[in-house]
Amino acid sequence: MNGTRPPEPAPLLVADGLRKTYRLPGGGRLTAADQVSFTVAAGGSVGIVGESGSGKSTVARMLAGLVRPDAGTITVDGSDRAAAARGRRSRRDRLARAREIQMVFQDPYVSLDPRLTSRQCLRTALRLHGHDAADSRIRSLLDQVGLGTREADAKPHELSGGQCQRLAIARALAVDPRILVLDEAVAALDVSIQAQILELLEEIRQGTGVALVFVSHDLAVVQHITDETVVMRHGTVVEQGPTTQVLSAPQHAYTQLLLASVPHQGWDPSAATHARARLTTASA
Ligand code: ADP
Ligand code: MG
Figure 1 (cartoon, rainbow, N blue to C red):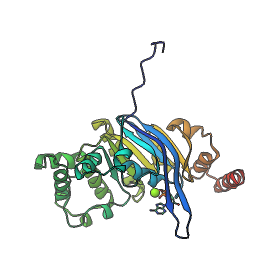
Figure 2: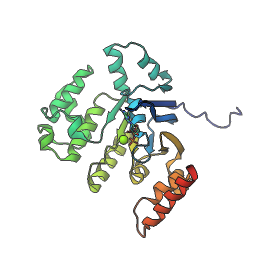
Figure 3: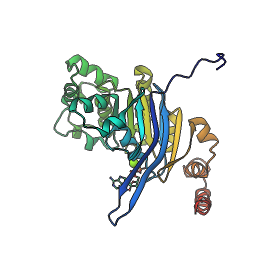
Figure 4: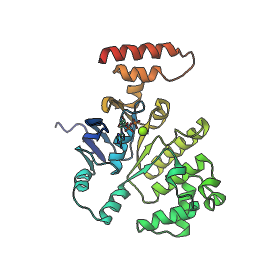
């Protein structure tokens, strides 16, 4: 240490060597994730990209504590979450852990209780975690995600997909998490609504300092919202780094393929087909 540079702040979350296998019906095991390591800075934004089946959701679920890793550690602020998961834990431990990392899923109609209005949904989430569930707190949460009085008293089926996703985000924010993990959270929305939700998430990150882990098969989505990108293929990380670098000068043939597959002006679909053929040959 020569002392000329300020020390890098310790990352908020460190995922180190995560591995998860699933038993196959016919015997044997499928490796859904292996040796997955990355960090998330406090208030940072990390994208996890890759094609369907590459292991993104498995990693997201391990972060949120919904899936237990076979190996590896997840530490938040230096304390090991996976180790805690291995021991017997009380409901209080589980809730405390849920407060740190909250998850938002692709389909809000599935993740929201159809019987509850937005207001009731938020009240329930706040009470579950022993937070103040006063009307003013509920109003400010709704306001934070751009929902008004009409939406406050509506049930999910009376809201649009984008409004439901806003509510799901508000519910996640209700417990003041350090990290929001969003798994394909805008994938089911129209492109124009996607843009609004991405803008909202960026606003929330700036306003609250919550870190985002943004899981998406869509490179365009990740490009807009993340500082760092992790590229997954067949359960492993093939490339990671600053988003601008990974997406403008991808080093790995798979990242190049993902980029070549995104439709854009003057796009040549056959270039993507050729890139895939090369990659398949190279990794065979
Ligand atoms: P992604 O989110 O990138 O599409 P997933 O993490 O959902 O990928 O899946 C990775 C691999 O693990 C896939 O082959 C999938 O079929 C398998 N998988 C995921 N969840 C389970 C499960 N609960 N049981 C068995 N296999 C699973
Ligand atoms: Mg997935």
